[in-house]
Image (cartoon, rainbow, N blue to C red; front, side, top):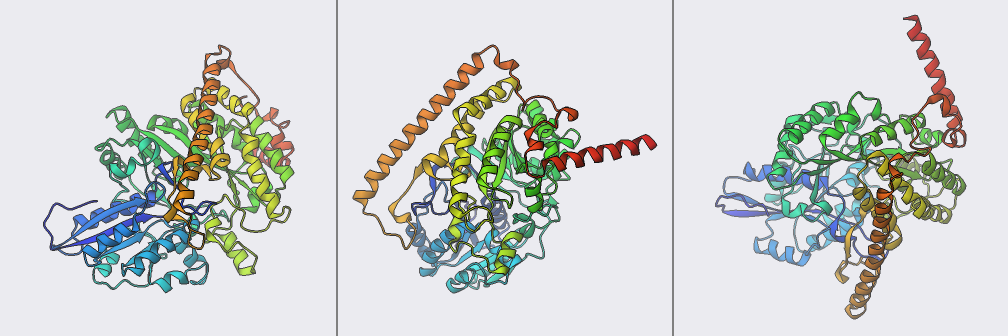
Length: 594
C-alpha cells in the first residue's frame, strides 16, 4: 500500500481492483504470473498517488492505496471487508478498466462489498461505451444502479479527486459523466505501479499510454467511442519521467498501449528521448508497441523504433480480404502494403505479432482456411492472434445490432473475442466456433513453427524470444481454452472464485482434480518448450539457415507480385492490386508534368 509519511487523523482506504473474468469452467481466470500488464490500473494508481500527495481530503486525512490485478492476484474480499470495518468503512473500492467480458465478475465483486456497506465505483470501457453509444440503461447498467455502485465514464485525470472527496463524505453520485469532456494528458500524473505489483507479470513488464484516441472509424472498435477520435498525447518529458520513475525500482520493460503509436504526433520526439535514455544513459529498455499497416511509410519510424528499444510490434492486420476490411471500415489497411511493412520490421530484427479477425461478412470456413495458408506462405509474419468478430458494447457494430434487435448472447462474460456471440450470414455459430479453433491449429503446425524459426535465424529476429511466444500461442488455446492474451504462467483457482449460480465444488473433489490438471497441463507445456527449443537449436546450428529464403522473405518487386495468392485469390484482392497500379500511374504522370 501507498502510505504518505505524515501523521493523519483518519486513513481513507482506497482499493483499486482490475477484475478478471470467468473461464469456461466458471472459475476466475487467474495466474501466478500474468502476461499483459493493466495500463488502466497503472494510470489510476498514478492519479490516486498524486491525490494522496496533494492531501486532497484535507491535511488530517491520509489515503492508503492498494492495487490489485485479479489476473495475477487473489482478491481476499473477506479480508478487505474486515480492513474497511477497522476504519469504519471510510474508503472506496474502485473497479477500474472494466471491459464488457469483465462486467459480470465486477458486479459479483461489487455485490459483496456493497452488502458490507462499503462504497464502490466502477469505470472502464463497458460503462463508458454503453453510455456513449446506447440509451443509458442497455447492457445491464441498471445492475450498478440497483447496487448503488457509482458509475464513472471518461477519464480520471483532474476528476478523481472529486470522487474521493464525495466518497469521504459518504455521498457518491450515481454517475460521474465526463465522456464529453476528455482531458489532455500532457503534464498529468503518469501511469505507475510499485514494483511489488509489476513483479506479478511475466518478465516484470509494465505499461503506459503515450497517447489516447484514434482518428480511424473501424466499426468493430470501442476505442474511438470511448477515448474519442481526437488524439491526445503525453510529451517526451512525461515519458522520460515515467521511465526514470520505473528504472529507480529496476523496471525497464514497457508495453506502450496506444492503439496506434504510429499516429501519435509526438512519436519521433518520444523515440528520440527513449533512444537517449537507452544509448546514453544506459537504461536497457525493452518495448512493445501497437501500430497500423502503413507505419513503414513514415520516414525513420521503424528504424528509430529499434533504436528506442522496440523488440515486439503488434500490427492491426485484421484480415487479408479487402472486401472484409471495407465492411469493417478498416479502409486504412492496404493488403498491397502488408509484405513491405512486415519486411521492414524483419529488417530491424523485430518480432511481429498481428491480430486477425474471423467472422467478417465474406468469411466462410473454406475462405478462412485458404487465407491462413496464404498468410503462412506469403507474409513474413511471426505470431498471429485470432479473434472472433465481436459486437462489443460501445462499438458501432454493437449499436447497429442492438437497435435492430438482432440476437446477441446475453452473457457479457462471453464478449472476450474468444467466443462467438451472434449469428453470421454464411456460417452457423457452431461452424464459426469450430473454424476459430481450427485456425489456431492450422497456423501453429509443427512445420510452420519450424518455418518461423528459420525466418527468424535468417533475418536476425531473436530466436529465444520467438520460441517463448510460439509456445505461448500454440499451447494456451488447446491446454487452457483461454485466449493467449489472457494467459500467464501457472493457472490458479480457488473454490470460492466460481461464478455464482454454478455449483460450489467440494474441496475433496476440487483440489485433487486441480492438482492433476495442473500436472498434466504443465507436463504438456514443458514438452512443447523442449520440442520447440530443440527445433530452434538445430535450425540455428544449420549453416544454411542464415541464407534461408522463401516467398514471404522475398523482397517486394511490384511487377512480380501479381502471381501471389494474396492478390489473386482473396476476396477483393485483384481489385486492390488494380487500384494500386492505377494510383501509381496517376502519381507518375503528375510527377512527370511537374
